[in-house]
Image 1 (cartoon, rainbow, N blue to C red):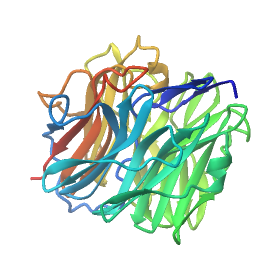
Image 2 (cartoon, rainbow, N blue to C red; image 1 turned 90 degrees about the vertical axis):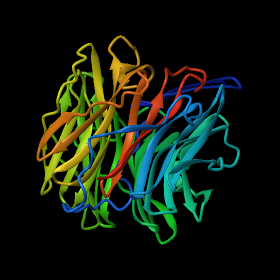
Image 3 (spheres, helix red, strand yellow; image 1 turned 180 degrees about the vertical axis):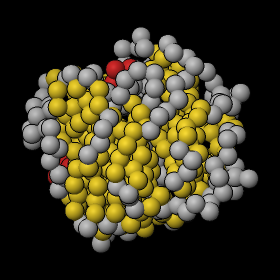
Length: 425
């Protein structure tokens, strides 16, 4: 292949260009599925606090790169994943929180890999995690799965269907136990069309599960993707994403696992312009979930499910009306206690149409209490050029991750990892 070009449609991702033997990757910080791991929460859990503090930013323990996903199996234990590197050398990055301190980890690259990216992580218990993403080598790429066991990361075998597709990506993962996980993403066909993909881990092996046909998108046409998944048991999950049957229309996409079968669930979010649909979902019990994302304009997208029926929720509009906004991660401890994180992006940024976090204009934190969403004040020490990609909470303590600094198309040198935390009271 003498010249190869591929565009990642998903927000906070990249445009990868391969010409001859030179690899140029422009990866924009991404979002992972939120509330990963054992998703069920109870209403008696301590409420999510409103006060956040910057734990890691430029000059305070950060590294060049960005964090895309985080999972906190306890109130004092978390794992975050993302990407580090510069130039053409991009490597998967992980950080773990233990005893009040974050420690850098180095997940191994896939064999022969030129680049590796981790977008989402799920830790059902402390010390046991699964992370998913993408790896690139020899003019092609496919989904990446890595597993953390006893403090050591290892590359897991990817299903054949994901390795033989023109390209494949896993954007979100949710594990209810160390041996039962669901990951979602998409595959790219030779013609450039995309199909949603679902992979399950059971009995020690990963296998691709048949994803239902999106009604508005005949197989082999248009774009459709699953961006995030949340499971409350091994047979009850919700996955969200977007459906773009044409360049002039984007709708939200929701798929539900019930009784061992996946089905498309009606959802009402749509826009006549290209958008990113739902980016993250958090379920606290069967049939009760919250999903967030972006379609267009300055008001982010929020949807909620009560007993399996989805409705649109009203999200507040940030005071900076010159910006479009996106919520990229969400964590819910109960039906009346959620937090969502995202970013403001300049309208004039050509990447904004794809929701890319190329030049973040500010972090966005919103909290929900008894059905009402409100904007939470950012920490005073938060860098202005910041954005958040994911959040995870446990027993009233939360961690949110993302990036600070402007993204450079040829390296991550302009961006640094960003971590915010709030402690339960």
